[in-house]
Length: 344
Length: 288
Image (tube, rainbow over the protein chains, first blue to last red):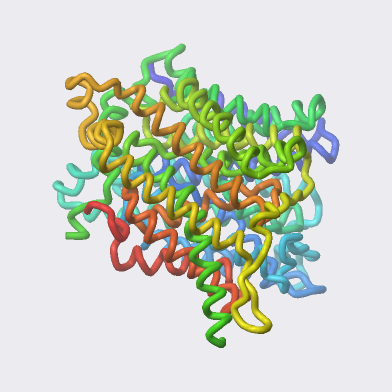
């Protein structure tokens, strides 16, 4: 039995549910769900690296936070900046950063890749954390939301939480569709081949370094888009957005939901977020619960919720094959040392 | 910068480098021998510092506090290896990262529950409280020199342990070929448990002796962890010699960065890392 049809059905229901949600929600949960959808985009972008390309990036929060800071920088003190202007500038800046960091990082593999992405993200974190002009460790406010419109004609008002909610929902759906199409296209097929077996893919004549770099830039830019939306919806950017705990959190979303599926990470973001919200009511020691929870997932649910659904309702074919997984593990053992070809 | 300041900063850098080496060598050993990427390593450093602070409340003697604290940390390391890490040997790095990240969350929260979010200080032992006079106006604390000395002794001890003893032989055998070592009758599971506990104790020891000069505060483990990663990446993962050179390089770069480029102090070490990787992507002593 194929899982495609039930999953599509489930996703349509979920989108419909999110679309009517504002009619039943108070302002707190409206903003909370906006945040969860933003985290969903963020997690999906990381899944492109972890679940599809096989690159375990531990510095993904850098791009998320950087986009917010770029928005804060281009927004004048007492005036709104046009979305048409600020969005391309922010995404362009993030893409450039991802290109530079990626250029260093994809030359390495395995554990080196994890450590290097982490180190670069921390470098950006410290830069913003100590930059007093940008608010230092307190972060910086963005007083005016980006203006969406032409001249005096405003199309939508991003100062309105409900409008932002729908704007983010539309972005989430758009990112999902974009990634789906991209993964079906030749480029997407090649990066999935890299994950399955990089050596074979290279033997077929593909410049895998370049493909990995492009995937890294795309994922970074999408993370930046999520960061842009977060900054727009909350109106504040802080160094915490770039902190490695944020990178760890989003990695948790990906694994909990199920890597290698695009809906899984979104699901992971919602489940962990809602769990956080519930646990907070009972105890202030959320991190303790979170820590135990993530260890539980690693030990007993390595394929995440999507994997669980796959095991319960069908063969794992649509998610990830066993051969595929073994091949990836082999690749990681080989990849524990940096690629010899480039360095010799 | 005059010569005395230069000397003082060099001594500071070397002393910081030695502390980094204690943490990073455990990290690199655990990876090189066991194939485990252990994010919780910084938490051991933090625990060491907090345990010493806690024990100092009872004894007032740093030596006794360290001697009591070390067995505690060996036991903590052993238990974590048995009940968490040992399930990860054949798993992807991704899961190792996540599980040990979960451990960090738990340790950080436990630290908050037991000790709160205040900054604490641990007094320098009175025997070592003096300072060496360098010039008429400049002095250098004896305790910092003492740290460098004791770390040097430990580094030499590690060199002997790994290169010259039977246990060291087993460790090296396990690192180069796990299955073959097992076939030859070495209980590799036990060797791994020992390596992990020793690594934990080393990191904790760094936290303990470092406590009197840097205060004891929440998040101190995270900070040292990331810097240790940089050290390990620069030196080449799995190489003790690399960890030593990397630690010295970073210790000096960080210290002089703070003096010469105060605005970019914390960025300097990462720039050093990027430069080294540009030149040798596998690290200075890593195997290509």
